Length: 594
Ligand code: AMP
Image (cartoon, rainbow, N blue to C red; front, side, top):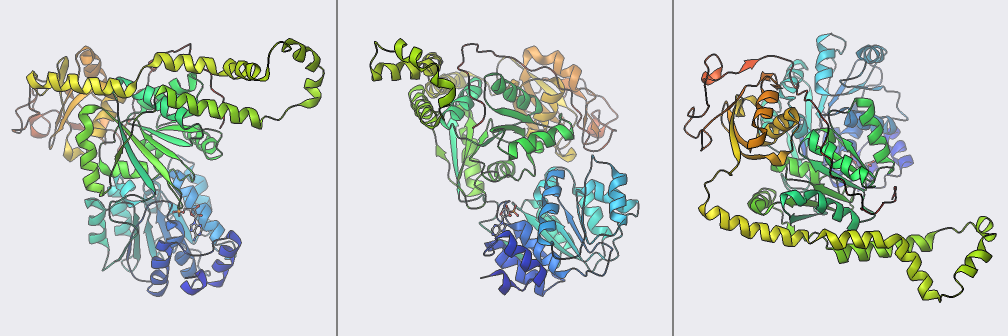
């Protein structure tokens, strides 16, 4: 099928020709004719980023626009500023020959400038939910002529806590509007939006529901907890041309991993919520231009990252739910390319892979972390190739040649090659000879663990059990608990053990020696507008019988526990402190750049 056959307006077809889009992608082929023909219809498109979904909604939206009006006819709502700018850029390219205005509005930027732009006249607004709602409430964005509301990456928006904002926007827009929802996965909350706000939507699914891209190879490797960082380095060393994303669970872990990699000469930078927006923009621009080879990111900061050519996603540890994993892995293998998503798990976490496999309907292969010999071979070949590719500066070296040749007079060709290769390579071999076998260590730890588990009680030794005054009803899940606690106390997520999230409170284990630090720093911090209180508890089972947990319980909060509302929504301002340093002065120096 061609774009002409889909029925798009002339001006749009002209820009597509210029762009070099030859044929519609599957989601475009299925969505566009429907969205053009039946302008009032609702639509649900289940598709990953990278499938061409921006054009799938953007092209019909532009084709349906009435150019005479200067009041918004289309609202596109998406989770992040990054995605907002990307969609706006795409629409501007698609609408090059149309006289229509596309304006992007997002939080964290000067609202006055955005207001001025909107007041000049606009056909389509691309927005993050909070800022759009603000502008609607200020009566800057007029909704009377809105014909289409597009929810892009709906699952991400709900993950980020935009549920109420989205509800308010959809309720404020005219009843006659059509709603087009795009989502990579279909969790309950997305289904609820479809059910509440849509009438008989056409549902198009590219791939299966909740399933990730077929071009992604999912691999898990079992390592000891303390070998995660070593494993990441080996993976990068084994894939010298990697253009990758490493996902960590907390800001602190992200900063530490990136900092350690950077110090050891890897071309890696962090991306997390403690960086200012301009800093994040700079990091993203450098990653996009491949000046940065490896980006270490939190799930939240990496949302909306829309970069082609990512070869590897490395999961430093598993995310807290399968949807997050789908989003992480979906950052690779875009636009028909292949990619690998590698998950590092401890021996005890193998069951979690089985659960993800079941939910995604996808098989994971077990991979080994490359051993010293394999890495050295790859690095050696890379060194040889780099040497072969080097441009000799004939003029500059000419004058030194007699001296150089006379120094090597007594050696034959083979000997000279060996010496030159060794000059660069010895440090590498020496490092890896000392580094040991990560896979073997994991096996031994698994055997030890099994032995220990037989006699041990369910909870780890050396841990303190805590009671936290927020639970499922507050939107807390294990991942969020980890983020809140680790960021506030500035500790590693590996210090946290078992987590039990109950309806309105939670329990978790953490290293005993961190007890005071956790109590001091987590007490009073805010999660989604809920002020948290934390106490040490003796509860062993995680409060399965309701309110049996909690050391010294206080009255006043929900369920008898302290829990006071306050602070702004999504206020998860966490302190960030210095990060742990592990230096390896003898580590071979890396070459920056790819
Ligand atoms: P998206 O899923 O919208 O982020 O698109 C992923 C990438 O595919 C972007 O770089 C688009 O420009 C590109 N793309 C979208 N549709 C087509 C098409 N029909 N032909 C070629 N490239 C496309």
